[in-house]
Image 1 (cartoon, rainbow, N blue to C red):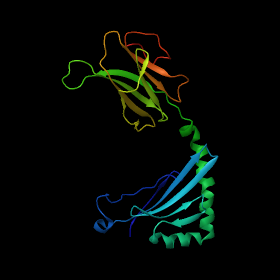
Image 2 (cartoon, rainbow, N blue to C red):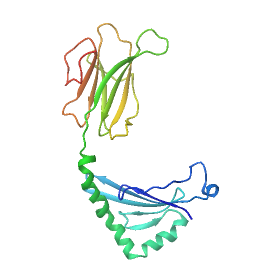
Image 3 (cartoon, rainbow, N blue to C red):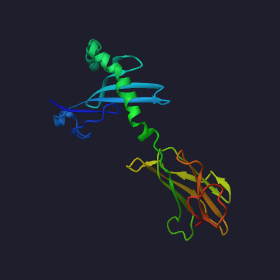
Image 4 (cartoon, rainbow, N blue to C red):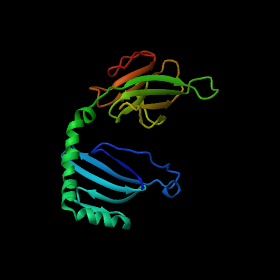
Length: 227
């Protein structure tokens, strides 16, 4: 006996309680059998690839690839299943059609909410000092609330781009379809210095900038006034 789980972009996800990764089926008496569906898109629906993976106890035994048109065994244990499915015309026909009935269909349904979704980023600059040092030695540009995830953040000091002392976190998911990233500039601001964090994102018609330091005219639409 065993539990059943199915997941994927094609038909949604159905999940059950599964054993902890640290414990094997032999220890728990619980087994996992899963079909994982993947829809891979290139240039919208111009080029669509559908992959259906058969996984047992976290090991992929066989898969269907729409580019091949057949089930293919990935291990000796998967050979009987792949042979059986390939020998049933109704299963093979249905699976081959899922590149259209599942992938292309779902793309049209979700396109307005996922592919074309745009959320503008918000910017904030704040200074940081290391440990017991009395002076500021870093500036952080916090870019939050944007979608999709691709974003470009640049630092400028007195109008010149800084590239050598810039460190960025990975883009982090917020859990609400938006993202955030922190981009840190290692610097010791001097009197009269002006710093600019500039962000380019698909949701913006033009780059947006946030300034820190002495007021200067914005080179691009500003997210806020000088700090």
